[in-house]
Image 1 (cartoon, rainbow, N blue to C red):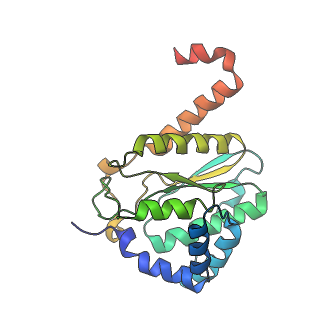
Image 2: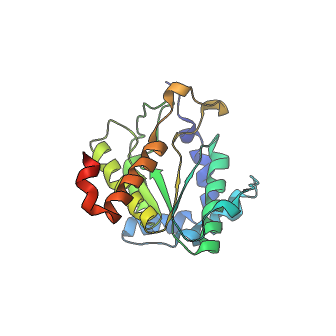
Length: 221
């Protein structure tokens, strides 16, 4: 079976981290454990390297609310464009609004390229758990491979963190498709996820119960 596009791009991404001087620092922090880092500072360092090869322009900043929480939904054609675009958005929104930006992120590296039937690269769950734990206020780990024993429990925990972030005025970036397209070709419609729509509906229910709890029983009926 064909390797996933994400897996093929790892060497190039690793080289960008190395040129930014982050590889040794991140590995050291992961080995020591409990070494929380400044996500925005590291993102700025990595962007210097990424934008040398990929120029990113983002429009529509005026549509982002200044005070309330918001959900920003995106899909992506390739890793080379995805990472610098996300980091550019996160850094600028943090600088202009001074609020936390939350990024739900897959907590494993897919090994094969079959749509929505992911098999995890051996060791990648452990590796990403260590990496993501360095940025607990920014990255929300989300299991995406259904063979994992923590698939449902991990996604439940992730959803609660996302809901709290939105309710607290945070900005959440989420990709409902959640995979890099093979050869840059869009996925077949039948493979699309429904995550973003369900997330919006769940947030409305969360807000309803949070602020109008006396009517919670009526809502559940």
